[in-house]
Amino acid sequence: MTMPSEFHSQPLATILLLLLVLLSTASHLILEAVAAEHDEQQPITLPGCPDKCGNISIPYPFGMKPGCFREGFQVSCNDSFNPHRAYLAYDGVFQRINEIYFRAQKGLCRRNRVWNRTREDTALELIDISVAKGEARAYAAVSSRCSANHTDSLSKSLRMRLGEKMSPFLVSVTRNVLIGVGWRVQPKMNSYLWSASASDALSAHGYSSNELTISCLSYLMRMPQFLKFATNGSCSGRGCCRAALPEAVALTRFALWISFDEPNTLFVTNPCSYAMVVESTWYNFTTPDMYGYEEIPKKFPRGVPLVIDFSIRNGSCPEKGQHPPPDYACVSGNSSCSNATSGLGYVCKCWDHYDGNPYIANGCQDIDECKLRDLYPCSSDGICKNTLGGYACPCKSGMKGDGVKGTCTHIFPQAARTILGKKIL
Image (cartoon, rainbow, N blue to C red; front, side, top):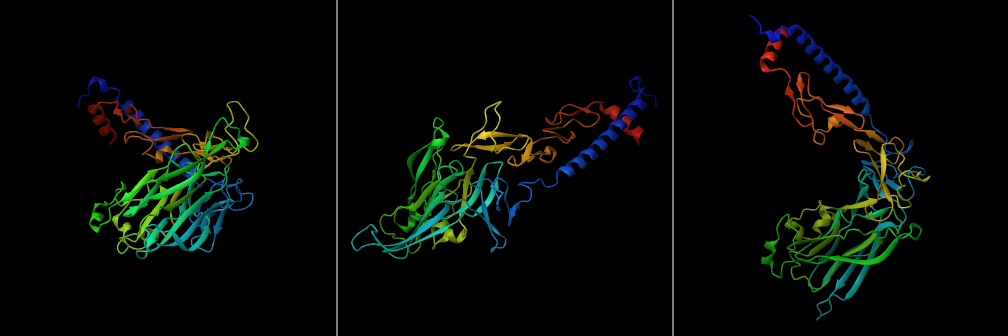
């Protein structure tokens, strides 16, 4: 067969193509070796400090032993459970359950006679901790009101406290909501909150006190036939209500209870109503939650997830060019300081394309974007290559374009690739 003149240099082109394929294979092997080394578990706490309590990771500034945590971030690990359970141990952090039995006076609608009262304080059990988000999640108790008959009812109210004004912990006002569940329920959340003011000096705590009350209403009239209007997944006032928390406030404590009015006429089928401050995306209302006795506490015996923001309160981010103070928390390279989104203080963040713990030395490490294709695209015609602080996705050998944008195309026309393929074979 006589080859066209443009293919007289075909042997040289074939050799070059083979060399490109070999180089690509070698680079893949090198990248796999680097990735395997990078996959070794990076430390999340200080040397010699335990980093787990049961199934929960405990990253610095949190810690369980003296010398292993920053002031205010102590965690206690209860080994009487299997697996062990972690609790916030900072002084002044607790939740209090008040149980009050009410009995309505004859001829009166309002329950104005208390005939028994108990109180129980418990520590906040941790669910998880994320230094990347600057937040922790903990189990919070559910408030309830349950009626045994026309006259007697049991109220369980909650008082949550995350420490004093300069506590590192705040209730997240963007990640939590107030929810009420019941055929007739008006949950109320009340607190003396602290509004941060940038103009106030930190030594004076920089807060002003204000009272906060949040409420919502679920009401399905008084007749059983109206219960059908409650809908699974809907929290718009029929069987379930929801209220957002106000932004730009520093919330360290709150009380949660169900407002009392007239007796519960549907106590036989719907004896209980509930109130909770809970992670906004977590609870999904279902109509069975309105029926039976203590249904929600039975479903969630340890409580419901509450999102807690944490930050370094006793300081601020240094100005550009200014040396950080001796107790500066952002000690890792490849990290930066950001002002806290609520309250005073700051949080530490790894740079983009880095991951880990910015609160410990060398805690922020380069991530392998090639293993996170959903976040960092690289087309099937590209070769993903991890780089320090980023990644590249050049097109495969014999192609041109951009692998990230998915625009790789063949350099050689189809006829040339067909002839070269036959020659190689």
